[in-house]
Image 1 (cartoon, rainbow, N blue to C red):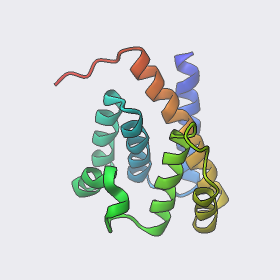
Image 2 (cartoon, rainbow, N blue to C red):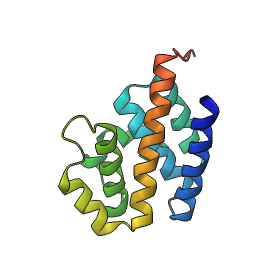
Image 3 (cartoon, helix red, strand yellow):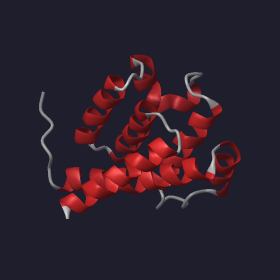
Image 4 (spheres, rainbow, N blue to C red):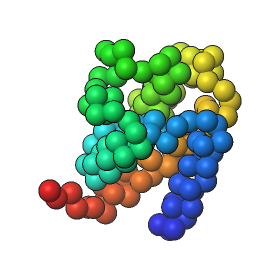
Length: 137
C-alpha cells in the first residue's frame, strides 16, 4: 500500500513539473497542508525540502499567515487557498469562490496538479500521523 502512495506521489510530482509549478513552491503547498493537518513529521520534512529547493526562510516562516503578507503572487495565493480548501474539504467542501479564483488565475493543468497534490499530501499526513512517525530533535 505504501508503494502505491509513493507511486501516486511520483505521478503528482511529474504533473506539477509539467504544469510549471516550481519544486520549492510545491513543497510550500505540501507544507501548508501538513500544517493544517498538524502532521509534525511532514511539516519538518517539507519545510526542509522547501528551503533545500530554494524557497526563502521568510516565505517558509510566514506560510501559516500567508494571507497577511506580500510574499506570494496572485497565482501562488490562489494555489494556497486551493490546497487549504482541499485539505479542509470536510469544512464547507471546496468553496466556489476559492475554485473560481483558482480557475481564473491558474491554468487547468495547474489546478489539476494542485488538487492531486492535495489528495496525495493529505494521504501522507494521515499515514504519518496514524503510524506514529517519530519526530525527534
